Amino acid sequence: PVFLAVIYWIAGLNQWFVVRLVQAALDAVTVVLVERLGRAMFGRGVGLVAASLVALSPPLISSATFVLSETLYTVALIASLLVFVRALREGSVGRGWVAGALFSVAALIRPTGLLVPVFAVIATVALSDAVPVKLRLKIGAAACAATALVVSLWTVRNALVFKTFIPVATEFGVTFWIGTYIPWDARWRGWDNISPTRELLGGLNAYRSKDGVLVDQRMRAAAFRNIAADPVGQLRFYIRKL
Image (cartoon, rainbow, N blue to C red):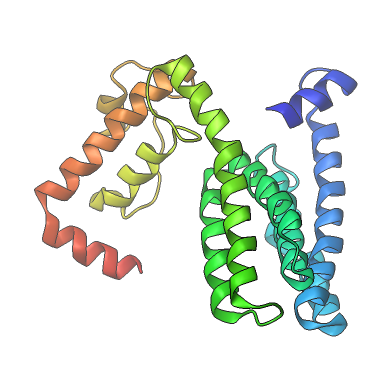
């Protein structure tokens, strides 16, 4: 929302064409960042190949044409990983804190970003040999602490506004329900006039903030009911999806 607000403040409300132009520019930045990341990790050749693949990637090119969060998230994610890798290469705990702050920005754009620092630290301990293990752990701990600190400010804000625990956003319940509703085969079919989402909405507007919180809670509860009703079928479903 802040990203769009800045563009609309400069160019005018709902200037979607301008948003797409800015997103295209961000994709170009992503290409450069990927080259730097590949070079930092594996050398110049790998960096150039990786950047070329990103520049020609149809999904990335396509996503820039939609007013969605993918493009902004991608550039934030690659920037945070680049800073994190450089922190490891230089043995800099300070850069680890900066990387964590950037991880948190990515997580606030898309909540799946919360998983990134966890797996980055695991990979660091397991694979990196640029600096001693103890220093790697310090850098990883700094990155995770910075991520948790910044995200927690948003979590506190959510608790004050909505009077409930929402770490980042309210999409978890919906996604959880989709992943447990066997008839839909984990594919989203939409809200409108479709059973059982019509009944789960119960007249609420899923896109209105306070209604969205209630919808998320209902979907989460329905997901647990799906699991309880057919645990064996759910297990088969998960294995097949994997």
